[in-house]
Every structure is written in C-alpha cells, then in structure tokens.
Image (cartoon, rainbow, N blue to C red; front, side, top):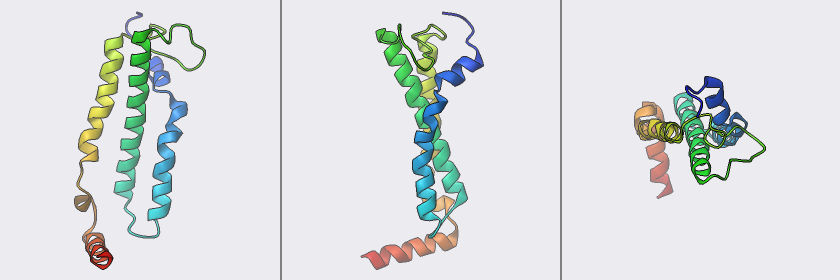
Length: 130
C-alpha cells in the first residue's frame, strides 16, 4: 500500500459521480416543501446528511469489495483498497466517520429547527388530520 494516500485518491474513492443520487431526493423534497413550511436550514441539513451517507456507503463498499478481492482487476472508478491506494483499515474508518458524522446531524429535533410559526402550523395541521 502506498503511504500516505493522496487527497485526490480519497476524493476519487468517494465516487463523486454517485453524489447526484444523494442530492436528487433532497431537491425533490425542497420542491415539494417550498409551497408549505419551507426551511433552508432543514434543507441544508438534509443535503449534508444525504451526501455524507452516500460517501460513507461508497467507502464501505470499497472496503468490503477490497478485502474480498473482488476489485483487484476492475475497470471503472478508483477503488482505494482494491488498487492498494489506501489501507483497508483507513477506508473502513472513513466510512464509519461519514456515518458517525450523520448521527448528531440526523438527530436534530425538527421542532428545534423550525420557527415558532411553523411549529404552530404543524400542530394545527396535525389536529385537523385527526
């Protein structure tokens, strides 16, 4: 394994071409919410969580395929472990770091991020739905 890994290897290993897969559902949600109670802070939070999850999944896939040897002879995107660009332990740690970064972000209570007016409207809408 070549040490230390270059930043460009890690960026390529995150597979930037897959990131639109994480962005698209957030944009759909923004489009749907824009008519109702839209909050930029929540939208940005959702986008950060979605991107970190996608990158974490990409690193986890790289790690698991690399330690099994399925990426040794491969055509396509950079594989950090399979091409021996990074140590398997480092790639696994990067995946867990992405997932770990999401935990506090995803746990932000929605009412705390919402304005008082929006929270009041949400309660009113919930009562009407009953």
